[in-house]
Image (cartoon, rainbow, N blue to C red; front, side, top):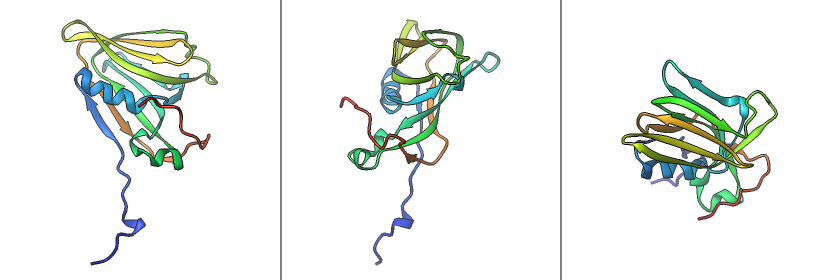
Length: 155
């Protein structure tokens, strides 16, 4: 038997889905404090898909996150989107960086409802969906957080 080697370790990228509010609360916790330029939002009316390319903090690393804080680029995607509304966001300003505080689902006429993305600084995005279907998928390798600090995260 040989000892485990660092080179054998695998950093598994996240690839999670959400079909109900419990699932979405997990995605919301993982996306909390994610940052993204206002220009990295896309709504494709034809496919009825809304996507954000976010730089999310790797909360899943547990206590290690404070010793060596990392971020990773991820796609946060919502399906079945019939309308998008936003408040407090200038989508044309490439210098505007937004930060995710929470993602929740409000059922209006089951299974339809609104996905509400609350952003720091009083910004918000509301997605009208026919049914909740979301995913969070890491698309790059983790990198050291530029601030070298972990954001405050209420446990």
